Every structure is written in C-alpha cells, then in structure tokens.
Image (cartoon, rainbow, N blue to C red):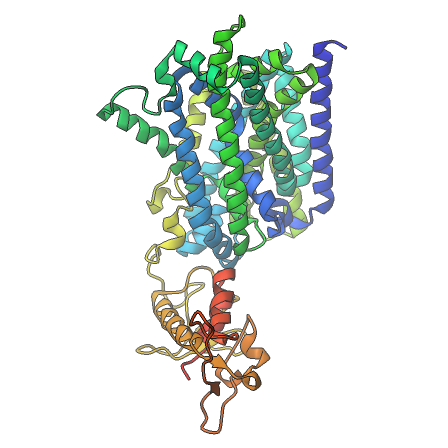
Length: 572
C-alpha cells in the first residue's frame, strides 16, 4: 500500500468511530434537556475532557507549536495563562454555576440563567445574549470549516471544497442526532487523540536528534534566546507588557459558553473537584507536548536536511518523516479532531441559543418533543449557513472570528454586555450584590406566602417572618435571608462541638432535606438532649454530630435544597 492509502485508511477509521459514537449518543438522548445538556448527567471525566478539547481546536496542534518554533519559549506564556485561567474557572465558577443554573428555573443556557439571576422581566437581556451568541458563533463555525478545508488540501493534496464538505458532514452526523452527549463523547475521544499525538511526535524527535542534550545544543545554534521565557533579554516594560498580554488569554475562559456549558451538564456540584483535576492534568500534558513539538522541531530541522516552509505545520511535517504512514494518518486525524470538536460544541451552543433564548421567548409553549425536533433543525440550519460562508473564505470572515472570540469570551462585569463578555465570570456567581433591587413579588424572592408543604419558614431577628419556596426559586436568596443563613451557620458550628446521645439521634435530623425543631428529641427540661462531649486524642469530638453532618452536606451539594434544611435548625 502507498503512504496515501495508509493515511486515507486511518482517516476512514477515525470518521467511522465518530459516527458510531454519535449513534450511541442518539440512543441515549431523551427529551429537549437531554439533547441540549445531556440531562445534566455528565460524569467528571467526560465534562473535563470535552471542555478542554472543545476549547483548544486547531490552535493546540498547529498554532502553539508554530509560535514556539518561530519565537521560542516566550510564547509559552500563552499556555501558562490558559492553564491558570482554566484552573480558576473550574475552581470558582464550575461548582456554583452547576448549582445555581439548576435552582434558577433549571436554566439550560447562559442567557436564560442571566435572566433568572438578574430577574429581568423585559426579556431583553436574554434575547440580546442569544442573538449575539447565534450570530458570532455561526462565523466561528465557518472559520473552523475553513481550517478543515485548508488542512485537507495541505495534508492529503485534495480539494478545498471536498475537505469543507467532508468535515461538515461527519461533524453534523454525530452532532445532529447525538446532541450534547454526542458532542461531549466525541470530544473525549478527540482529546485523547490530540494528547497522544503531541506526546509521541516530540519524544521520537528527541530520540532521532540524539537526546535532550543534543536537542538543546541544536536550539542554541539557531538562537539561544528561544530557550528563554523572557526572550533572552533583560526585562523591560515592553517585555513585561507582552508577557502580561499573553498570559491574559486565560481570562477568556470565564465567559466562553461552549466551555462553561460543560459545568452546567455535570451530575452535581461535587463533580467539579475530580473534573478539575482531570481537565487540568490533560491540559498541562497537552500544552507541554505542544511546546515540546515547537522546540524539538527547531532542533530537528537544524540537524536534518529536511526543510519546513510553514511553521504551523511543524507537527505534521515531523510526523511524516518520523512515523509510519498509518500512524501519520492518525496524527492527521488528531488535527481534524481538534477542529471538529470545536465545530460540534459551537453548533450545540448556537442551536440552544436559537431555540431556548429566541424561539421560546417569542413563540408559544411547545412540547419537549417539538423542542427536540427544533433543536436538530437549528443545528442543521447553522451548519448550512456556516458551510455557505466557508465556500469562499475571506479576510472579513477571519476578522469576524476574532470578534466572535472577544465577544463571547472576554471577561467583563458590565451587565449591559455580560451575556457574551464574561457572562458567568466569578462576579456572576460569587458577588452577592450583583443583583438589582427586587420587589417582594419577584420570582425567587422571599414572600409572605406560607405553605408548610413547600416552604421552609423561620423567624429572623429584626425582620418579619419570611418563607422560601423551592418551586419558585429563580436565583440567589436576598440579602436578608443570607444574613440569617450566616447566623444559622454559626449555630451549626456551635452544635458541632457537642455530641448527640445515641438515643437522641432521629432520622429526620440526619435527613438532607428537612430538619425542624420538632424533629429534635428533648429531655425533661424541654431542651435537646446532649451527652458530655467525649474527645479523641487530637482534641476533636468523637462520634457524628448533627451540625457537622449538616455542614458537610451543605458544602458538598452546594444547593439551596440543603441550605433550606440548615435554616430550620435552631439554637438549643
């Protein structure tokens, strides 16, 4: 077989695997929420790898290695900034966003969450956000199709138009039917392929050059400054500004809808911890591999008679020289995987914006089955428009792609443009004052209405008797309720220093849903029964206290449901 036949065979295997994963996701997808958000049941490893793969796109396989090849390690500050930004995003935004979007009327898109979070009754914020996401992400998808056609033309000596159509059809096949789950599962496979390719190529390149010492020596022969994180020069204002600008790329993570939507699709807020460790590990390994590809490429083309015309093709050029043609085909497939993972995620986000944030606002209520059908039609429509734009690529489209990333990812705290610029930055889920004044009749605010079956009531010091309805909660509690919750937390800590007697433990007191004063056993004097606190060697109370268990449940779940249970506890 010829080299071209091996490479084509690897590409066919990759396309077939993606279509099979899409069929599996189609069998698992039920309902509109399942199509748009996988039913909020993504395991941590799927959420982590799909978030990383959908974000990196072809930049990881071509852009970053090419930049390192040209300028050296000073361009690695982009990777450092992205890693820090992704870590902070997983740490501060992911768990709270997962809890608050479910509480806020089960919001499944970022614009709908913002509407419920800010209690916008005019619907203008939701409509404007959805329209901006839809327009700019359509151009984003078009740019990825352009990249796929150009890559197909360079790697396989094929037609640009054939490459665009092939990438669009395969991506559309598993996204149209598999929905969000299909896009996420294929992202996992594509992320693994990218990581393995970025590890395999530089390792074999180092062996061919003669080891790490020879590789470093060859790089110094070309330019010693390429091994310096500051460009080989003394720190100056220009250098510092350049480093800060490169590292600031990581700030964009706080507002990218196709990344943070993975946080909303996790099983629960507790999944953010393992997902963060998995995702950041994958990201560190992949980025180190990309940086190594650029550096090893400098030494490889310095010590061998091979030449490189385009720096962004350093990974592909090295793989064609060093690897078997079948393995080269899978490396090429990994580059296509980087492009297709972004396309599928953008299609789902655009479809959800069109259905959830535009159609449901102006249209009438429809059944979940109809919404599911509309979601698939919107995916097809966006793909067709993006494909038509990609037939004749121009600088205008590429410039609009730059605006698309800035409009959807640049962090900002201004409510007027928060829908697409830093929509779910830490401000939106941490700052308690990030809410307008609400009337007592606003959704999700404490009201005077009391319903023992559905509300939890409690007299607060210095305020009237209020209630919190779980069925109408659309955002965070008000400031008055938050002050009372903090007081309850202090009481729980005082309870944690004591130990309940074995006979006084009641199932209702250990429940994660509702625990009232009536459920706490009392002694003859009418106060809750305690035993003397026996302590262990390290000085902590032995046994399981109700306050400690309740605090643990609240910390792990992060939901208003468990907070409602803590509000019902009183000081003994």
